[in-house]
Length: 244
Image (cartoon, rainbow, N blue to C red; front, side, top):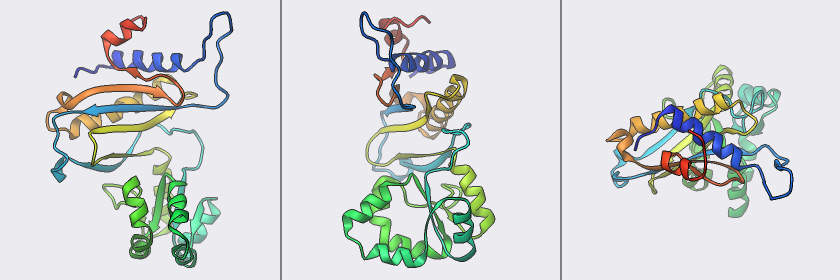
């Protein structure tokens, strides 16, 4: 599959334009919330029964999805790391609170894990986290990963601060059971050039992981939360009236 910069930019512009509600005889209407922008890539000719062809990695985008915001993380730690996380205004879980969570019903644990995009865990608590939450984190790709696959396992306050900064730009790229990737690459409010650079970085990273590069891409789309998916394809863009 051929993907060049101009094609991606035109597809991105079309996806954002199509997110505007247009009805005949009425003014265009923009939704009242800042929609996310997703990239969807369908893959082909890969064997996910082969562990070497699966991907489970935290990837850093060039630009923050939401500027100057805290990442949606929960820090599970003790002592100095726990105190620093609280000082930073992050959600936290102490060892005692983790043990209390273990006493809760299965549905409560599921809800807790779904609440966060990532978890940052002090290394000495990873065994307890795995015992209590792995069955809920694993299927969602939220199990904390050590560097270089991820940034979620730390041992001191400095590593906490570094991890928090990274998670402002991090997304989880996981292809394990199905040959499809759908990830959030930004918000509609972002500058389109920065959105484009985020999209391009994911496309290039994924192609680099594939045995036959772009030839393993079956199709790719860009869509906003409420908008119609726009295929990254020249013929499709011409069909919907996009000027190339």
